[in-house]
Image (cartoon, rainbow, N blue to C red; front, side, top):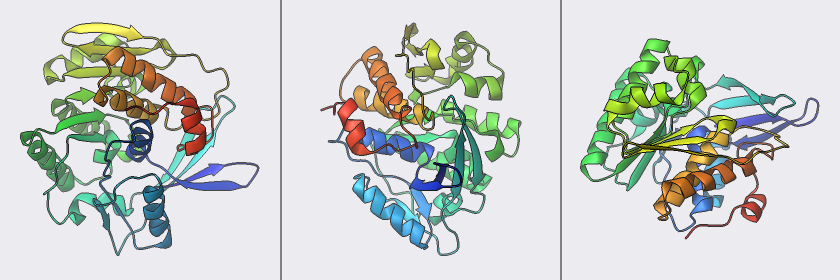
Length: 295
């Protein structure tokens, strides 16, 4: 998507971002030896051409990026308050990405891991949602692992019941899940980690990594729980992509062989770095000066 962010007064900065896209970019930066392909649809407009070039600069493979001749990129605008918290305005209902599954010529893809979010599901119609889950089931039969973040955005769903239905189905397919305390409070009225873990208990998820803001990261794996503290950030500039960056850091560390607790600490450090700069995707030079690459 196109990201528009207020800089000074009426001046806007343009970039490209989106929850799973942010995670893909930061994952690649954390683990440069990885090969990342991004599944989406874009338009035939000049902004779509710019996005393809930008993905190349980030070393994200574009083999699963499909073109729509009828639709363009979606757009969102961010406004931040004095604490760095953000408010979004979306223009994406008719974006090319809403037709991603329809534009796929077939489902003949393979991967070691497939990462998606609640937004990935929300923007699709019901027929495409079913086809997406058919693709996920096929990938699982090939040995692919599934990672999911609910990333609940009420405005993108038809209603709460539908969001609950598809979010539950996504959890049931997941090997690694990143529930957020705020997401579950809004969507399921869960008020604490115990509520979330109880809800997820019968979903057969291998590892649950619950993000709970300044309280820390709750990890549930093999029926054992722990809380990993996160470092305090005194000068928060922009919390956009904080969760996306954490997920990227955690997965990159886990796939590089680090244990869950160390991976959570690494993910928290990635997120802490990102929120001290404006925009969802911070400059690569700044990122690498704070975050060492994994091997």
